[in-house]
Length: 138
Image 1: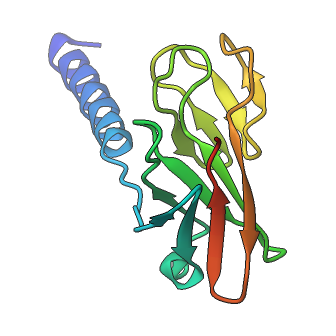
Image 2 (image 1 turned 180 degrees about the horizontal axis):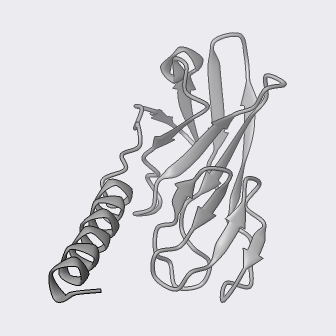
């Protein structure tokens, strides 16, 4: 392979690799408003639209709360604070990944890969016809 072909090949690989990292880094998540009343957050079910999950602010932490909507009509809420060094984990498909040290968690917040040693914190969730109630820890 001559020098010109080599440079073009390396440049193309670098550009496509950089573009993929930029797309991943620019991933955005939809935040919804939650009413903070007493020891709970209230989120309207209609705020999901067609999404299977949304994020909301956690008044007790810098890390948001992941609120998932399941196919059976139930909901779950997880803190996105990594239990290793308190970095904010990212939803990545059916798992959560910590960008700081690589810990991975499954959809229920259970550890798949360390260095974290504890599962993500799971909030108790109840619902009525229109609202999801996330119970905050005391």
